[in-house]
Length: 391
Ligand code: NAI
Image (cartoon, rainbow, N blue to C red; front, top):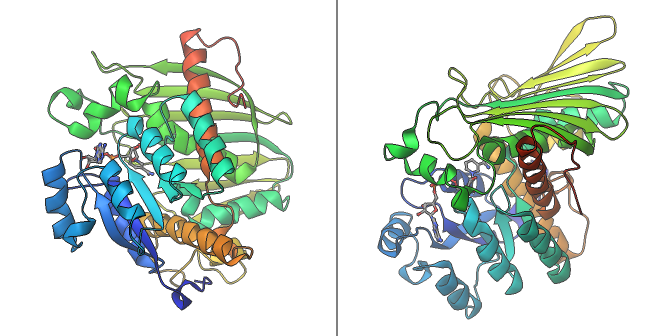
């Protein structure tokens, strides 16, 4: 790693959500620990205060840093000299906005889960608040933490593929192929409730990851989209499958598929980018490899850890090639990047490579705008073509 974070104290991290049995909070904690750039010191971990306190104790937190809810946490932390520096929001979608708004307004930096908010209005307001307050807000678009995704981005921007023509991106999952939301699966229950999830089902939950990934690697801006959402599981209130066609500025075409009912596919995020001179392929089940094919048809296997990779990729690599790195390291790269960006701002300098090209509030806003346009388009039977970013 090229960050010099070890030379200073770790940033003090507070967490909202991510309690016992929750999914992503634990990944955030592992990510924060991995490079030692952040240290968890406080939290309001659960919608149930008692369960949250029990969980905080299990994490070795001081009892006076465990809070019944985020408002108590905010008030008490503000009074402390050793208050948290940054707050990670790991709660269901509908709570992101009020929690993020409260902490940003009080002067804290924030790391927020995607989708940023459940309405475009709230996403616009949060992005504006970040600009107005000067606070940092990172959004955890996990897949942009992978070193080989950064390598792909560098290759596209260096013109190795020529002008981009076609982008194919997909995020298929299988876990919601049956109505598990009515069989006691709490994670599926809030994800299929429009009040908690927002207007998108699969498109908000995982389509936003795919959309960000495609835009991140290619640098292309969506000009218009048309979409076909489907709900295959009877009684489900939101889409569990989405097909979206994207027209990018400059003429490139994109096709995005997200699905929660794709039996046999478990987190099979796949990106393929085709240009005038070559193509790139990346598959998250094999994330250490990036395939490049040139015009003559030879395919090159580019391995994570290879000596001639970009600084963007190297700075996100811990072990030599052949020792696999994966999802947890990618998430840690986001965390270390966020910490580096915060430290650089405090120290009045430019961030090192790992703190550059990280997902921020505006990327979160773009994701919410995308979901909105997809739902609108699908409700209008795929017509008209809509522009996702209306800001
Ligand atoms: P989950 O249902 O597993 O956990 C949610 C946690 O938040 C629970 O501990 C619950 O008690 C707590 N909680 C709910 N309301 C709260 C409140 N007002 N105050 C404090 N705690 C509260 O949910 P999961 O799957 O971990 O998802 C959480 C968020 O993370 C969602 O926005 C989801 O879209 C996102 N996510 C992102 C992923 C990524 O790759 N970046 C992967 C999975 C989820």
